[in-house]
Image 1: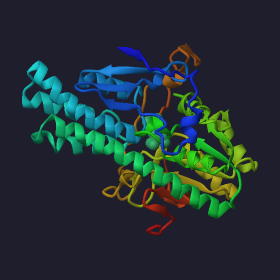
Image 2 (image 1 turned 90 degrees about the vertical axis):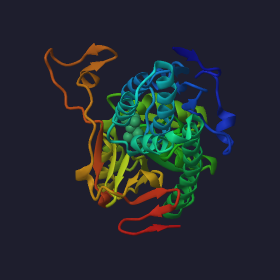
Image 3 (image 1 turned 30 degrees about the vertical axis):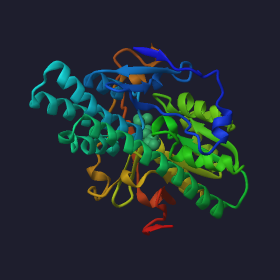
Image 4 (image 1 turned 180 degrees about the horizontal axis):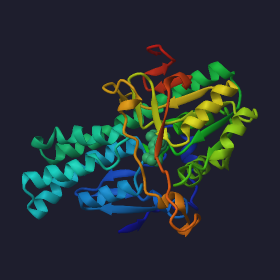
Length: 357
Ligand SMILES: CSC[C@H]1O[C@H](OP(=O)(O)O)[C@H](O)[C@@H]1O
């Protein structure tokens, strides 16, 4: 059920964005027995919530990216375990039905480590009751927002120290803002902090085919924050970087291997390669929990493959010959050697160095 959220896209939240303390947005919330999700597939045209009462409806919402972004998925996963408890009581599930539903939820999107982490953290508390499980989701959200704001500060400090204390032209890929997190953003959190310090001249927003998280979501968040931007096709990123239009590229991460390899939205690797060629800093922003210490390198990462039609249809219209097939990986892996700085809430981790404050 879609519920219009007050203060739709036409309403500006410019004053909120200028206020560093106000959450930009909360895309996932527990609604006392159900989950309220901002349906991101309707943006930028409609600001409307989904009320989710069943685990499989949450899984469907995750799979169609109504809720998306690693941290937001972790919070949704934790609340999904609470939802399973409520649904089990309502429908008389036995233990195996409950465990199977939680297992399907955990596997809904395999690359983002945060989803499994959120489900596991909540499942570990099921013997303590519903309120304890719900509290896990709330704690993840609060911790994520705190981490995001610290990432913003550390990232802005590192970038301005490296590039000089001046307004910058930033490139970003996909959406890493409040819509992808608890309330603020990782890479977009750094951009928000740079903006608050008066150090953003312009943001180049990769549209991020095929689901357009950049043009639909990042552009919307930047507009809400009063930050000037240009949407560009993904294919324009390399020439913008090599052509001297970009001072720094800042992206997010869905999973980071212990050796620093970064799994992120498809197209990120191309941005990193162009930055390396042009000598433009390539900065990854993520909470420290995104680092999967158990995965030595990217070979262990599962890269989500998505439906052909996401590539073959544009606005519901087929744009390839009948019978065409597609190659549609949702993520790629950027080798650690191409990352100039990994910014977490602990500070800047430079290539082959521990976290430095
Ligand atoms: C702050 S995590 C954002 C991360 O998630 C996005 O993927 P998706 O839109 O498929 O959930 C993208 O990789 C972003 O960098």
